Length: 152
Image (cartoon, rainbow, N blue to C red; front, side, top):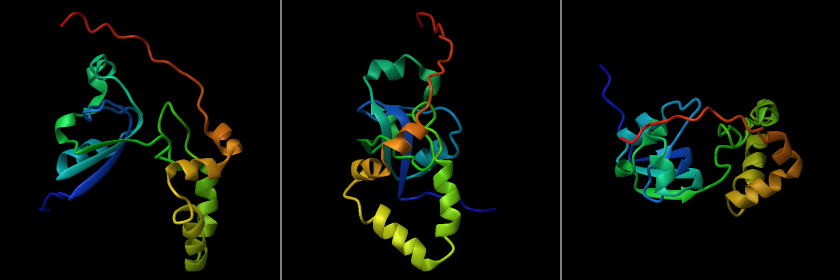
């Protein structure tokens, strides 16, 4: 037996959330739901903050209820270099470059100085990536079929 992990804080990124922390999440969701329910506090970052009616319109995507969320932050592109399904793709070029960067402590420190400590905030990070990268990561729309949940 291994005791359950109950972190003090979990930071969970989702596609969209309302101001109360009710969050839609889709795609490969990993352990985000479990982390949110296990943590003492949850900081939710979201690609977009939407009206509560949007969340209620598709209850099956509400993986994280607001009752477990301590804070909601609008942080577009927060998954980069990973992806946020429907918003931007995985940055495979980054992952390939990281293999070389991670070969030495010095190159890792240089990377951190430039891309983590050397940018003011997430917006500055995204801007520094540049339009070429933004364009490369952009996804084409592929809508799912509508669902009729009925009156109740």
